[in-house]
Length: 180
Image (cartoon, rainbow, N blue to C red):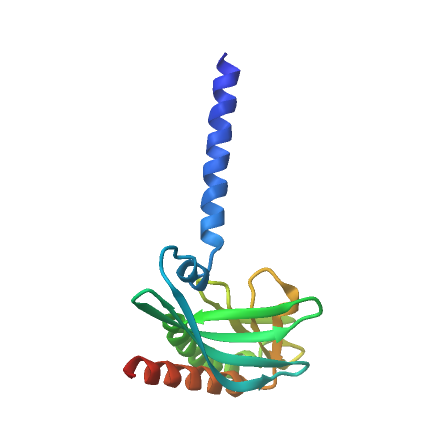
């Protein structure tokens, strides 16, 4: 009897932890578009492509309207071997990412002189989008990672300014759309 009660408690605890993990895995975009009982509308505003060392990625602002509420996301998409990888960066995270990129650029100027064999410095949003660089053998390589758990979602940038300009254009587009 005692073992049965312990087993039942263990099952409920496991299910509770698993349910929390699933909820935490949803991005801000997924949470917003999963609303029920409202009409969802998507509007896209195309931004310039991002040319990386090996790939070209598409960028756009996606306005999502759920009922009377609107949210804005900078989306960066890269065609992968088997599927398209997309990051949806919420507007508030875009602002934080811009600030982080400014700080990373300052730190990179010092870090390329490192005596370590490898150094990595990055910023990660709540939804798992990453921007950063690594230094190896005296060379600094900038990158963005679109999806948290996918190795094919990494774009190696020629320089940080290429993504910085997309961030700025995206921010400006959202600010324009908020006024309209």
